[in-house]
Amino acid sequence: MTPDFAPLEERHCRRLLAKTSIGRVVYTVGALPAVLPVRYRLDGDGNVLLRTTAGSEFLRAVAGALVAFQADEVSAADGGGWSVTVLGTAEATRDRSAADATQPHARAHAQALAQDTDRVTIRIRPEWVTGHLLKAVPPLPA
Image 1 (cartoon, rainbow, N blue to C red):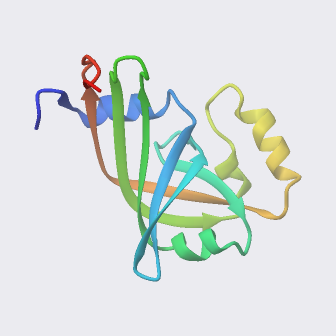
Image 2 (cartoon, helix red, strand yellow):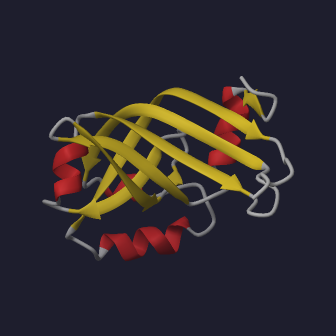
Image 3 (cartoon, rainbow, N blue to C red):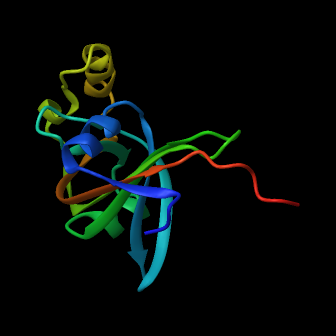
């Protein structure tokens, strides 16, 4: 570990994941790595939930597969922030209860999703969670 990075406890990582809504899913297509930026949220059990179109290439690639999910917040000014990575199996569901959450905006979001029959919820159940604090440092010389 370099002096610019410090490991975070899993409990802290989970709290940080709840503070943002944009992340990346890392998966494979034809044995090659693929990365897709996604909007997400956590459910009450700490699972990562995201939505995709039924029948999409992304859904076919991730359903039942081990995937990585990463979210972070990093300052453009000094590089300080955090990064959290989750490994888990992605499962596809049309269960509307998966669209419900404990977050304040979730009810309106769940109502909108209930009218969207072409969408599928992907649930990533965390099997391994790790994160790092990125210490602020002066910019690299040009």
